[in-house]
Image 1 (cartoon, rainbow, N blue to C red):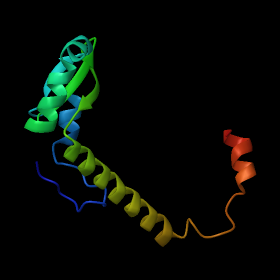
Image 2 (cartoon, one colour):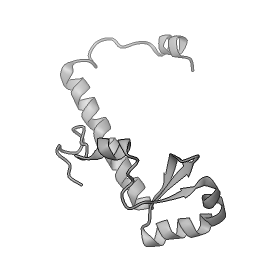
Image 3 (cartoon, helix red, strand yellow):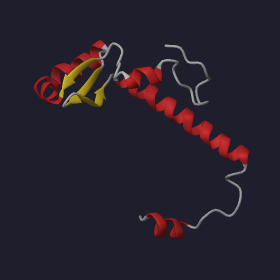
Image 4 (cartoon, rainbow, N blue to C red):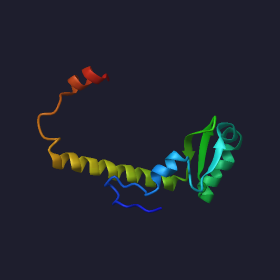
Length: 112
């Protein structure tokens, strides 16, 4: 997979949009929710000790994934870098300057 931008700068693999459109999960196996219930222990073991990845489907549609914990750390790192890049962009643009909005007004408008 090739990334054409630096992480944190809206990095996106070159083929990500195609993968999403085609439900292409790379080397991940797919399991139905029924198979997951029947084989949960085996699937967790294969993730934890074999590095396998699984996409869980219901009615043929992908719902979630079971991945090794290292993959979760990587996903969190990517999200953190994107958040930091967003914050830096907002800070540089001046959007964070000014008095802000009091919390009670935010709660009134959006709920608690």
